Length: 151
Image 1 (cartoon, rainbow, N blue to C red):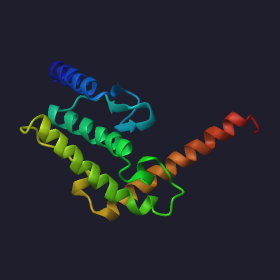
Image 2: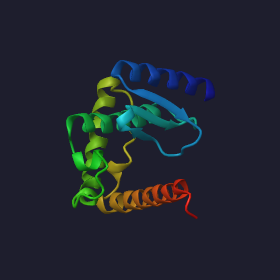
Image 3: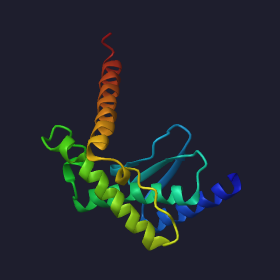
Image 4: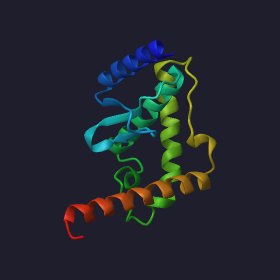
């Protein structure tokens, strides 16, 4: 699988170059994400199937497209103070999943798209993402405290 996975990563790098977004494979993350302001997608370096890797890439790329086009703007700009941030997060992720599926089909109709959010209820998505954002906020607060030097 490792030789094939190297080829799959090479394929994703070529796609990303054509689309004008960086892609990074990292041993330091288990969850893929898009650094929207940096136009960079970070994908775990754990070996996976071609279908799964390309699905992940196009899901994360869809976040960048939504940001660029101001789709679900409060969510994609990380405006957690907005009243509707937590209400729209499930809708935004489902939208992104569908867009990612469509991009994947355009790229190669033989790839089976792995869309995690399309298989979850909105309540499950909100619960999952709310926990994630609360943890991120605690980490940011801790880093701010540590940088202040007042302890």
